[in-house]
Image (cartoon, rainbow over all chains, first blue to last red; front, top):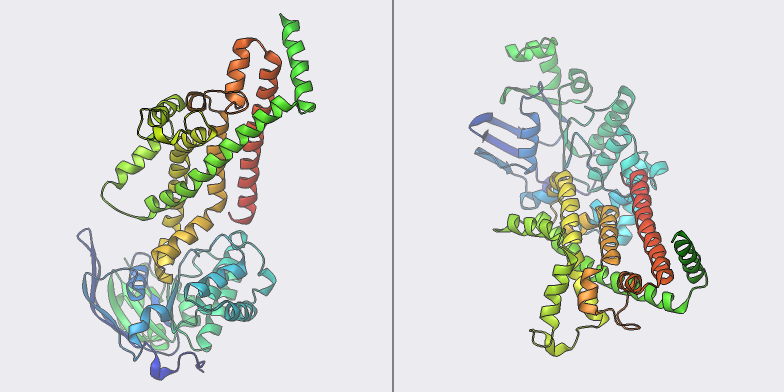
Length: 246
Length: 235
């Protein structure tokens, strides 16, 4: 099910990543990474801490420049890629204003007219279960509520692609569940999600496709079920078995 | 001796509660001069401070250090500089501003500007560090970034404003030199206290001192309340 705001034939996907490398201070942080990100169920970027997940997400989103290789949106509307993607960070960066005003702000940055903003804010609050918190100052919400707001704010922009960097890393199980439900809701509404996590169980709950990153290299990629049941690499096997392989 | 002080204290209290016209006039002028000076400084200081926080250009560090150093500028030196600029033989002598409230506003603006500029640069810089990635993700332009940061820092900027006001209302050196402490024209609380103490009219001096202290207290209380409110609403 894809909402009408980005029919497949005018989207920015797929994203083609070819021979991507990132070198900082003469350390190779990411080496020779190639994959294609296509529309569909969530892609989960899996790997241990320090594997390079955050860097890869930031590169894809355009927050970092690669040292080598290329990252290219290849869809029909690729020229407008900046405005059609969003990112949610590990620690939500919320503005010092109310929950509703945070969403309204994001819409305003995209030039959405005021009248349209009001109804869109109400709709997003409603769909994300944040309506009771609408008037509360965003910065004093609980961690889980803050992350849900960050997600809601990103989603309000109706991105075709939504990057998420360990969105539940700092949350307790209940908050994690509610954030994951929201992620599923957003994915079902047609937004392509690329999410990083080091949490195997979370990957199993959310992933349609897995990219397994190990020491800055893309070791495995493909169908999530296949990765969880029969990983092809030593590192992948160790990770799925929950053994520290470092 | 002790009696003299208590008598003066009683007289001062009567002046204050009866809103003595001489005293009221001086208080009013003090507030006018300092409020306008702080307002002007804030207008420029917030903008320059925000730009210094956001922009990268050669010589930026030098300007930042200069502004920080300017926070501790002695008021008498600023008074002297403004005096030289506005005196008849100075470059702006033709304007005839020396010994007017305008001259005092100019001097206090210069005194307060580095304070507001430096403090707001610090505030905005801290905020930018927190928001930079999110702003790039939102793909904001420089104008949007500046406007957002100024609003996000509103409570702390207000505190910077109060710090500037506290400095302006309490200084005596600059307004004395460029204002001249002329009765009914440029006499403000601090210059009046200096004069009346020298002349031995302790009642008026103490009365004004009382108001000055109350003002300082109110400014600090306001700053505290703002911080407190911000912590609960904007963290």
